[in-house]
Image 1 (cartoon, rainbow over the protein chains, first blue to last red):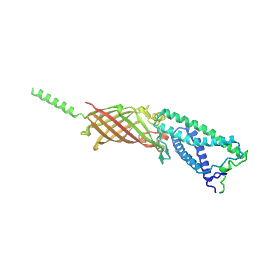
Image 2: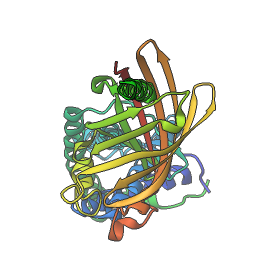
Image 3: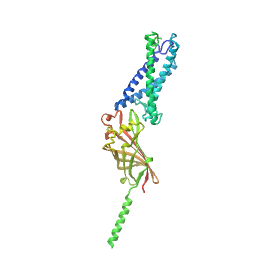
Length: 182
Length: 188
């Protein structure tokens, strides 16, 4: 079983990190929208879980970047036109950007509102900003705008992968889904 | 004549006696005093403040049996970093400010612990419920100025703060830490 990446395939670690991130981000977006218009103690509880999971995503994003730096990144097919290659790289880096931007703006929003972020009761993130109403609103807007941008970028990423798999019939999706043998 | 002088003597004695029996009164300096509270929500402390309160303090370290501290807290003056916190706290399920605008704190007995540390058995009437509370505090007096720091831990459910689904203490905990920092001037 391939642990590390090769020129042709993503190894098992990269695949697990990728799909775990997909599941976590999907859950976060769903809970974010649902809890936003809720009321009552359940809302407070969901907000707490949302924040804790957000910090986990931030840590996972750091892990992913470290693993990427320690690995060869599988090359895009030679047959792919250069504008598509550019689009792919841009979308991938934008997605990495969102994996940092969303948790960080959330954490800043919480700090500016005077709510320290506890990660499931295990430890608490430092309050990097002192309570401040204008900053509360700014980070809240950045976080929400960020989510919409992320949804557009993620849609492009998913759509492209499906088009390459079903229309171009190349290896693009397989190399992130199939556990190749070393 | 003799009776008159005797009566005059008695009344003079009484007036001096009552004058000496007055325990030192202190006036709180509001701009240099702060009443804050903290409660754990989602495993992290959330802080708030009561911006208006007044206190009547009669305190003498040598006459603790006659010392009394009383405070009226304007519940509607609650504030926090996030607007939704005071907005919700003023509602019926929490402080119910409309029906219970003022909380009253009053000491029953003050004891000296050691050095500048004291402990008071007191009652707090909040949201219509009167509950015994213990206030531990320090007082440092220099000249005619007293600086006091006190704190107590209240159980919000004892006062009915957090009704219905909010009575559940797993999301918003029961223990509320209250801190008071006071600066007061002696009344001459």
